[in-house]
Length: 427
Ligand code: CMC
Image (cartoon, rainbow, N blue to C red; front, side, top):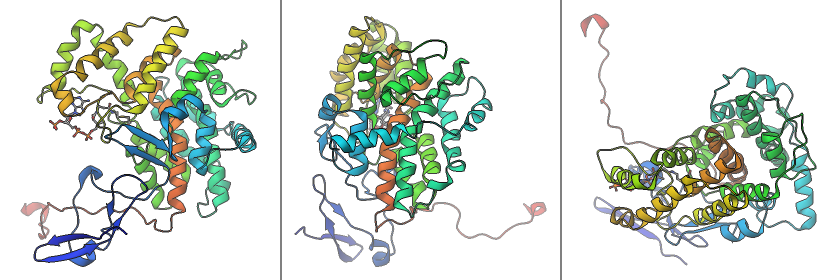
């Protein structure tokens, strides 16, 4: 039995339930706090606030541990597949052979998008950022799939979830094809989830596309590493949007918009651009000095994390994968040398040691994606593709949680108090 937590405000002291998790910090249940005290709590950025309970993903930021439904991310990345991890996140358990085959089959049956959706793409400029396109077309899915927007029906929720997981590769590949002026390719369902995506992205109708198994395996691993990450900004955005009863396609579009920012999913694009800008290991000290200078807004992209105060476990796998892919493809990329040296210097610098800043998932992913042939602008779209399963798993969990309420934060009001309107001529 966990002892209640006593909170003293002014001269009164009240007790609040302390809720234990399976692992991780206990949580003080302050839902009665306003009714008891007439006060709100203040926590910009939710640094101390749990907004929900969840059984999907656990992070121990100090130890650098990431578990999906209890399974460590490095084991999943090494031994599992993205389809298997998707099933795990959605349903809570690893699938048996038949369950996995059925799930993979179901996803493959939803890979096509409504034909009319392709006309949406033509409304965008050719140089439109893929994330701008995705914000639009994913939201637009709600106007095509009315039979899976009743969020009170668990069956419809699952169909919408399958549709989103299945259609994201098609939509992301179409964004790429549109930007390079090549025809869209329809999905080919005898390929794996990841193989099909690679073909839709890099294949052309004029030639048979042969999936490179090394690239397929590396890409699948990258998708696993991005599949879910607890209550991060985009997932919280999906939950907040969904808390009002908005349909799942609209909620995912909200998540995509949030993911785009350089402090979140946009960091993979920003990290590679930064490594290219540095260009030579000789220039690293200059950039380290800039990152430490409080008057310079520059930050080392791909470094630091709200939760991890240790190595991001995804970064370790990503670094090993970068080495593997470049070796297998026989590519030497000076950017990888810059990345490794930058990591080495930063990890030995007192500023980064003191602030516990380590490479995160975005630090090495760009090097691999670049080697595979993705343009930099596509990086965050690939993150969105993989994170879709995390978003739908978290969204489903929220909708079926009896404690779920519309998300409605409070504020500390610091504007003008009451004042009377003055006609324009008298101001
Ligand atoms: N370079 C230099 N200094 C940094 C960096 C960095 N990348 N990140 C944090 N700091 C400093 C920051 O200036 C602050 O110093 P001080 O205490 O003296 O003011 C201290 O470290 C704490 O930083 P914070 O901004 O208060 O921490 P946060 O938890 O609010 O931000 C973060 C986390 C990820 C937004 C931040 O570390 C950052 O901007 N990193 C670069 C962008 C990046 O790589 N984002 C990807 C995150 S992982 C993938 C994902 O979740 O999407």
